[in-house]
Image (cartoon, rainbow, N blue to C red):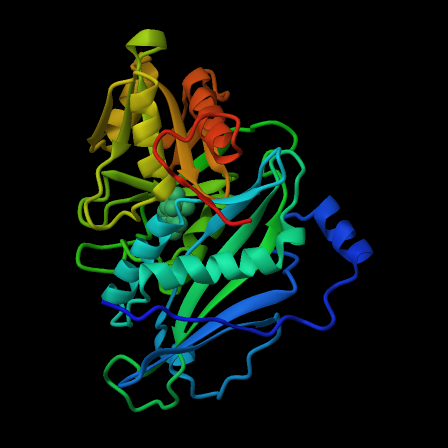
Length: 367
Ligand SMILES: *Cc1c(COP(=O)(O)O)cnc(C)c1O
């Protein structure tokens, strides 16, 4: 259906000196340093995708009336490149990110970038900036594809007719360098992240803008993260911050692994999807379900729910230790990272880094 997009390669004549890069890679943190290059592809109505270019990382001049700045047509993705023990570099399920990006685009009235072009854009950037893929334990190169409306004008009551797709890359440190630490969560009842018919399923900037105030409220209540409830009844548990949630009922060989069903208001996480399959591989029964706040609390107090964790590309898996709301607080299990939580985390990371067999064909070789 598409003619392949060819990338014009214009590498930097002044990449960061190796010694400076080594300083960044020694303690990358998250989203602080950016690699030497970026990829850009333009889309114009009537012409389609054009001018795919790899070029030096640089600011992008924008007209003050650029539509994205006023009406919020912006979507993004997040995925990682991993350096394996043999020095090779892989990305994890980039085609799944490409398809989700298409769905986000469709929801925001934006053009859909072909899956092959999305994957190729990442390959071109990672191959060029391969020296930026760190090799320390837990370190990765975080990739941020995104797209926004570049048409200029304010009096427009339709989707823009011009867009810019870009990919930038940033080295990322080990999220849990000091060991996996459980988080405390605040149940947000004043604010909602997504309502039926809204943009909850799309990875769009506006969802994040709408979330910051609730996250700040969570912090004010002494919690690390906010948990979102459904917009209609305000009692069905949906997500934690920008991660999906998992619940474990029972222990050991009798454990069952559950995650809230994708109702249209949850973001369909690729980590979430991968863990459903990994749990199955490990022999745990899995289920997509719905759970209310009241049942979450009751089942923690009765001991029926033994572990809860959140998952997403950035942290992989984060254990949830305790919950707080306007009505009180409770602890999950002993408040520490659970056994199954840690087992699932290790299994997924082992696949990503090549220590375990990639039986689902999730890894994509880049260099
Ligand atoms: C990105 C995101 C996730 C996690 O998705 P992954 O593909 O696993 O990284 C979950 N919830 C929200 C709201 C998100 O934006």
